[in-house]
Amino acid sequence: MQDEATIDEDYYDLLARLGVPYFHWGGMRATDRLASLCRIDAGKMVLVVGCGTGYSACHIAEKYRCRVVGIDISEGLVEQARERAEAQNISDRVAFRVADAHDLPFDDDGFDAVITEFVTIFLEKPRALREYVRVLRPGGQVGVNELYKSEDVPRDAEELISEAEAGFEDVVGLPIVLPTLRRWEGWFRDAGMEDIRQEEVDYTYGVREYAKAVGGWADTLKLTLWSIHRMIFDKRMKKIFGQVGKMKDVFMKNKKTKQYVGAMLLVGRKP
Ligand SMILES: C[S@@+](CC[C@H](N)C(=O)[O-])C[C@H]1O[C@@H](n2cnc3c(N)ncnc32)[C@H](O)[C@@H]1O
Image (cartoon, rainbow, N blue to C red; front, side, top):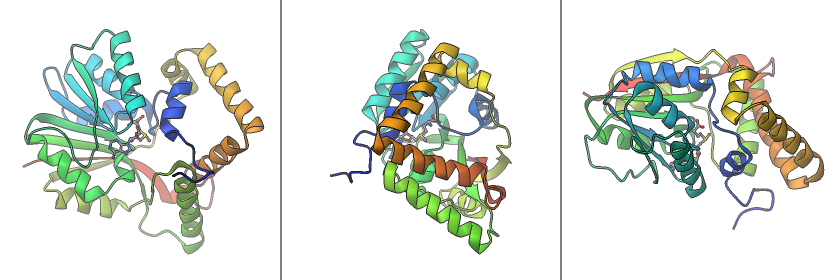
């Protein structure tokens, strides 16, 4: 049973129902860069792990004319992803199903690329990464967009980062502890990958891109007003948004901490 302060439906499900289309840093610019690093093009077979509302999966299928399978642990999000593919008329090339990233329901060697954005940070990394590699054909690429922290975080900044991580887990229910880049690379190597490359996600997306993804300016305004309304009138939501807001502040804005936290694209090849 969930704690009173934890939302009784999945946090990302709730946001998705409100119209938030995706939850990773760098928006579609980061997704396109990941697709390019993973050499995705027409005819390729791509697995998107933790696909959420299917925004990136549909974007990749449409732009690169490849076939995509998206999986997510949340039934609600998978349903939304299917609706998105239907609305975009690409259901013949994109399929979604409910599955756990730790135990992928696919045979070995079936995909040319595995893409995953802001998901593996919540998982048992060695186990999940081994699964990504297992389902790839030899020569295929794993590409992740994930958070990391520097090796040399001073003690006061480390304390603020740890508090923010614990606060997020407390209200959202997903464990998060930022690994260092070296740690991420170690997990990639241990999972059997080679030719490991890394790039910083140092770009943000503008309001215009976000509004387009939400469905237009009117929907963006509706979403903003709804969030403000819930923040004011619903104590539980206030606590949840407050904690998540604190984490975003520590990761993105706070002068003491933000230079030690980043997002990166990490790509590796199955030998
Ligand atoms: C931060 S959201 C990112 C969603 C999407 N990748 C995006 O960029 O918008 C994290 C996602 O991971 C999914 N997730 C969490 N644990 C999972 C698991 N064990 N297997 C598959 N998906 C999982 C959640 O349901 C959610 O959709």
